[in-house]
Length: 452
Image (cartoon, rainbow, N blue to C red; front, side):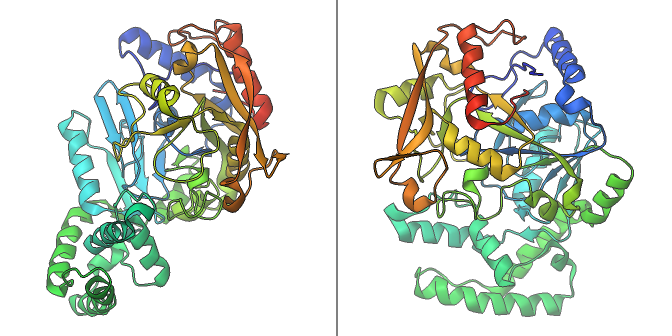
C-alpha cells in the first residue's frame, strides 16, 4: 500500500504549516500501514544513493511515533534540513527527532563527536523556540579534537585539485585515530589529569612530526589542548551516559526506536564509491554497532530514495547531466535550489539511476522505500531513467567497483513527463497517470516496494 506524503523538493521539507496541514500530517501517520502495523521495534532510516534525499524529514515524520532517535555514525560533516512549526533548521550533529518533547535523542558510540558544535546546535534550537531536547551522548563516542579539523584542512590544502572534497570537519582524522587507537573517547575527559596529559604528550609527538615536516605548520601544544579538553568536559558533562545500557533497557521495555543514518550507501567506506566516501559505515547494519544494540533488533529498514539523482563533491556519477540541462533541474530542485546543507556547494544533478539505487537498497537491507522529491520533474516532456551501464561496449545491470564505474556510460530509458505541478496532491489516485507510471517504473527497476 502506497502512502503519499507531501515533501517539497531538494531537502524533503514539509510545506505549509497551518492547522489543516497539521491534521493531514496526523492523518497520514495514522494511516501509514508500513510504519504503524508493527509497534515497539527498531527502524533504520537510511539512504541509497549520494545523499540529500530527505532522510531528515522522513526521520522527523516517523519520530512522532518514536521514543528514541539515534545517530549511530558520522559527525558534523553532513546536514539534515527540517522545516516545521518552529521554523527552518539545519541539523548536523543532532538526530532529527529533537523537535518532539516525548523523544530522547541519542548520539551513539559510532559518532565522531564535535562537542562545541553539538552544544552550539542545542543552544540554537532553544533560541529558536524549540523546547530543550533530551539528549544523551555515549561515553564511548570519539571526540573530534581541534587538531583533527586542522589536519583535515592541511591535507585538503596539500592535495589541492586532487583532494577528496572533504567538508574539513575533522571526520577522517578522527576516525583514523580511533582505529589507530590514539583517539580520545568521551569518558577520557574524566580521567586523572596525569594520565590524560601523558596520553596528550604521546599524541602530540606523533602529530607534530606530520604537522611540522609535511604541512610546515605550527606544532601542537599539550597545555593548550589539555585546557581545551577541560572546557569540553564541562560542556558535555550534562549529556554523558552509558547509552548502550540505556538502549538495552529501552528495548526490553518495548520502546519504539529510530536509527538515523547520516550520508548514504554510495558513501559507505567499504561499499561506496571508494575513495570518494566518508570515513564510517553508512549502512543500516552498522546501526547496531554504532548504537550498541543487538543486530537482530533492527526489524525495518526504510531506505530514502530521491526521484532524480544529486550529489555534492567528487566521485563517479554515471547519470550526471551538465550545462543548461543541469542548471534548470538544479534551479527547480526546491527551497533555495540544490545546494549542500553543510557546505553550501551546488549539487551535481542527474537522472534517476536505477542501477546505483538497486545496489544501494541491497546494501542497506531495504524493507521499504520512501521516494521523495518528485515535484521538480513536472516541467519535463520526457524523463530519462538510467536502467543500465555500458562498460567496454557491454551493458551491465550490476553496480561495479570504482575502477569500472569510471568507465561506465548510462543506458537510458525515457518515460513521458506529466507536465503539471503535483505538490498539492494527497492521494496516489490523484497523481497524473504519467507520474504514477514513473513511480511504478522505478519500483520495477529497483525491485523494492515503494511504500511512502
